[in-house]
Image 1 (cartoon, rainbow, N blue to C red):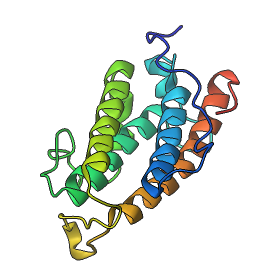
Image 2 (image 1 turned 90 degrees about the horizontal axis):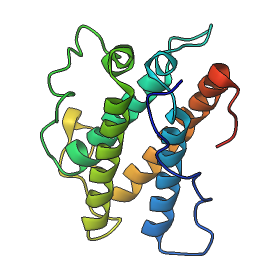
Image 3 (image 1 turned 180 degrees about the horizontal axis):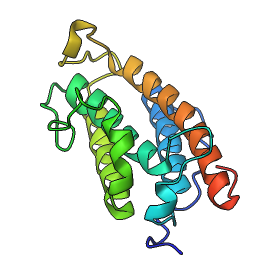
Length: 179
């Protein structure tokens, strides 16, 4: 049985009425954020650490990975903020997939709270940006800068890919299907 209580209702379909570009991108991004969180909802530590026979990927690993990706793109790259913990001190040289491999040791409550906190921080950053053309401040690796529009579209792509993985993982755990 679960050591979590239900967190959120089923996500609504994104963008039912035309809106601004920022609204459309934000709604799609929030839709995928909610779907990923719902895939992990109600599961305990053992289920969040469960893999399928063909992969070591876990729902807990996806939650931690997307928390890292949210912080990396919006807070670190776009805002230029220093990396936050636990990312800043992670041993990336020893384990390039550290967030994925260590999630099995994290509690469901910590994984979901960390994911929610990073998503909320990202929402505040998006809301505060003057326009979708605002360029990133940070440029780790010298491959940017990027405008907010590009980052949001990239994040939607990232979520769409990983929500597909979450579908398969959740179905393997308890036959739960759908978004």
